[in-house]
Picture 1 (cartoon, rainbow over the protein chains, first blue to last red):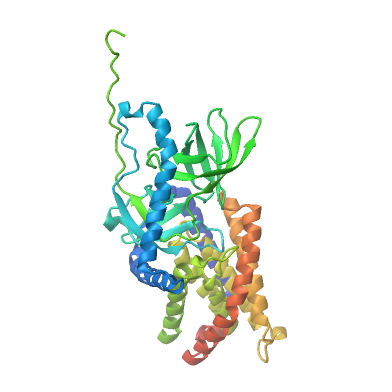
Picture 2 (picture 1 turned 120 degrees about the vertical axis):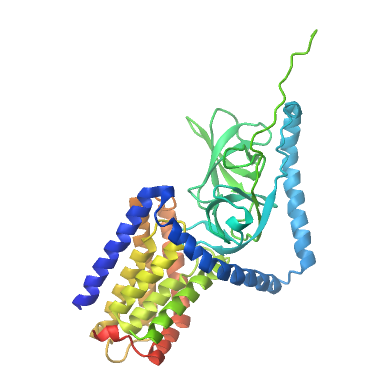
Length: 272
Length: 175
């Protein structure tokens, strides 16, 4: 019985060394090439099998192509409706003078979810069937008709891993649609928690939209406030995402956010 | 190890990995999903003992790590440990290592192995500062993953046992 035990110790030490190396090196991991290689080999198989599973599941649900089109149309309209409150506020703030282009129309690469990350029940990632060959890069915003899905974290040639909005490692800058108050929303596993950056009031039913940053495009609906906790220092709120992360199918990856927002300088009007 | 026996391991592990990510984890189940890879490693360990279990567990885990977004080696460590312990149970004469084996044994081993795997993975996460590991997430995974793995057992353990007998037992086992 000494053989297996010795081998076990050796393999455990190897695994631990790999973990330590990978954890310490962060983004510039020496194993990135190896991961890419595995993605390139398993990606196409995953893509094919995942697509077939999605079609079979759709057929079992009795979902026809027409149903699917209606569903997508519905989702798009719902998302548009949610943006209306925000747009009204923005119009009020004379945003058009600044000629902000964030009306939610960005070049997008459509993709289907083919797999879900798994690590004994702890992971909150999905794999989509589009990768660097489709122009996708790490750190891009992923949306669906309902709103924000997450952001790309690892990109292979044909597949990419998406960190979901509900993941505890996920944080996004967000503002409330009616008040315009800004906060940070972080995943909690099954929803998000919003913490306001500055003071401000929070109300149940408020909708959240992304503020836009290096990573995220602005104006994407995130979720709705379900309960508010007025703390001593900061107010926090629980947020239910608009997107059902357990039933994702078609998503879009925003590949080209506006690199710089075009702004027109405001001239003081003469004589007033 | 014969070429055929090696191919069997490679094929089953790859198939399990694909089915896991494209089917099992996408099932709309409350409280997690079954872990096919874990059940597969236990099945090999029960059929062939600790050496086979440890090697299969390490290789399958490493492959799973490479397709995941967490640190490399975390699943490899967990599954190598699972394969070793499950293999010890299989070899122990008091559990019928040589003679008749209780039909309930695989269920018990898979259930305990899943609970142990979830816990070891959670401890690793705590050491690495993984924000996904919380008490409630651990409890959910502990109950959910273990229960679903037990449900998967009758579809995996007998199949792997039969395949291993067909292809020929791993000569490594007898050193």
